[in-house]
Image (spheres, rainbow, N blue to C red):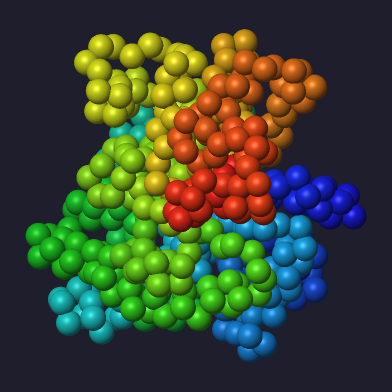
Amino acid sequence: MQLLEAAEYAKRKGVVLKGDLPIGVSRDSVDTWVYPNLFRMDTSTGAPPDYFDKNGQNWGFPTYNWEEMSKDNYAWWRARLTQMGKYFTAYRIDHILGFFRIWELPDHAVTGLCGKFRPSIPISQEELESEGLWDFDRLCRPYIRLELLKEKFGDSWTIVASNFLKEYKKDFYEFKEECNTEKTLSSKLKLLLERSMLTEGEEKLRRDLFDLLQDVVFIKDREDPRKFYPRFNVEDTLSFKDLDQHSKSVVKRMYYDYYFHRQESMWRQNALKTLPVLMNASDMLTCGEDLGLIPACVAPVMQELGLIGLCIQRMPSEPGREFGIPSEYSYMTVCAPSCHDCSTLRAWWEEDEGRRRRFFQHVVGSDELPPDQCTPEIAYYILQQHVESPSMWSIFPLQDLLALKEEYTTRPAFQETINDPTNPRHYWRYRVHVTMESLLKDKSLINAIKDLICGSGRSYPKKELDTNQGSEAERVPLELQENGAFETAVAIV
């Protein structure tokens, strides 16, 4: 009732509310309790490794049973969108890639590394055999050699081996059955540390043990042992590096085929079945968060369906680019310097000196050394780039707008991140450190934001609109009506 009241008030004031459709639901939610048949409860949802986390992400949500959902034309999804439509004029589909395919992990996984795409076409045993690969045990078993144990654990290797491993042939080890998954391994490690049987830090020991457990070339399908999936970043594994040259060549070819070629048609058809159902379930404008490892089929499908994509400058979709160029974005996009799932503009500026210098050189066009902090002048420049872009919408986290004034940057920048998808312990607990009342009185901040919006042509000062006659649309200059900027102006202002 409160949300409905706020939404109706906002609409009367010409303010658009944009909702969010999360990609997953908690395995302890009312949805999984009432509709357990719609979810694959023995799996977990995540994302493969990327720039932000070399071990991938494990969000802990069960994956969807799309086959079951299709039987009633995705009624569960349609009900969610119908409800959202009561409050919002537009909405964002979180991780829209999940409607093409999802990164699926077993429920005993802790990290997001050893997963597979669902749906996807696995590599069959017959394919491997036809290429001369016969030793499936060698390819799927963690590759743990005595030399590696000594290198990783030093003098403690015997303690580690006696507690977690067993020797199955001379100088080769495998994990004991009671600790051969990431979750059971973590539990046993915690128990041994409580008993002071190991002296190293828990985090380092867990990481080293996980490295051993994840060192495989292929992951065997849990439902069909004759089907296999190449481990992500397989060339980084010791198991791959110790293969003969012919086997390496075959594995590399199959890896790139699995991740970048053989699935495209299936993923396209999958999205064309599910996304139109969502889009037709309400009158809301549909936007899609299309960041991450993007299949080739995603952009054409989004264009075909009229879906609005997301552009984050530090995460460009164009291959070979380190930074996006807002002036080159297409109209059917939402652009932003940051969002709730990444660090703020100020925090990003402080995170990586090398990237900061390259940004200053290639985007700002200066050969000078950039300042260590994101000054109000730099914030203004970056915000101006975005608001002047051709994108349908420019949307800014409040933290990035507050960076326009030095007095609002006293809190450490790293504390302003709303959500860290790579860290399940980082909860959504961000609170603005200044009051709404003080912001309403801050005329210089308000004028700086107003200048950005009006200077970009996305809106005109209110007095210009009020002095014209006619309907609201007629009061807007003709050039704004023709390029659709009036609707954009209403949304942003």
